[in-house]
Length: 444
Image (cartoon, rainbow, N blue to C red):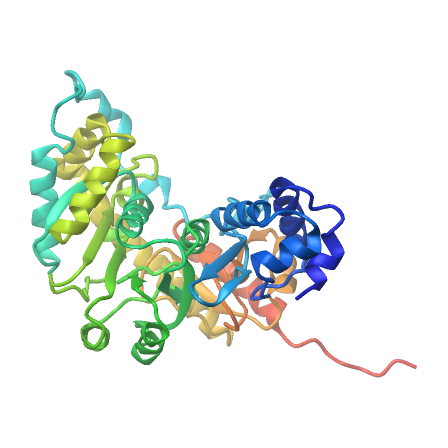
């Protein structure tokens, strides 16, 4: 463990320098994920600086998600890419087809201009209620129809904003959170940035695996974040049997905070099966981004009274409320028959495109999975080589390393939202050729 200090002791004369040097070492691979760091006193003694300087540097590294610190276990390098290190979008060369973005099909999104233009009137003023009552009632009806328990409700700026506020309200740095693996890369970043540890739980096509969740909770995870359908990146979706099994595991750990992220909502392509029964500490986020448009930064959040009350308190100290212009626009789109019909059509089209690609790949001997959602997960032996070879053929796909924790198998994520049948056939053919074993011969 002293290698870190020996390498940098002459340069780390301040907290800022320590942060820069450790970040550089992590980025270069000199400090690998999971590497334990010396204690504050050891670092200070060997680097020749005060313990306060080291503590300040480590605190900043935790905030950035470079390291995690756990009670009685010290600090170590975070697993996988640290917060801010992930590229927000992959470069798409001229003429290449982007299958990496995770975006919905723009042709299947309602016209926001028409919805906003029809609003009229004034926006919210200071001192008025943060939520539009009609929006809350419409959302409550939707969630009730999907089998979610009755709870307090508020409006947040997207599903991730809601999840972050729930975690901040209930947890603190050093706490561990059970997450899906493969799972949503931005959630991993968020947890690391807040100094929280990740407990990976393996997923299959039916979502989190119950025994792995039990093990994560037994290791001390205080919360679990679950995607009930349209899981990113694998497309996994809970069915009734799996949801019941996971709920049974959670009954063994009644103090666990349970958070459901239904980010796709009505365009997921399957019914919602929830783990939630309305007891304990819980929250569920329902975003409108994929159904109505990513620029509508709005989600409804429901949960137990204490959790939602803390979220509201946090909002009041920051942004105060989600724009009533956005709230009224979402409500107008929910009430619009043409918009509702387009959302229903989008769910059908995404299901057709998803199954079309899986079938095209299967016909060529390539295994892929996705029970719902906008993405298909394809295991591959050589991830980087596959991504590069597809790029050479004009396809941009997302490398699975962004979404994997620990020893999860290599894979690529393919967004199918705009992939028409003829294009799916071409892509499947190209991928099959890329994955085909190369002939091995003797050279004399």
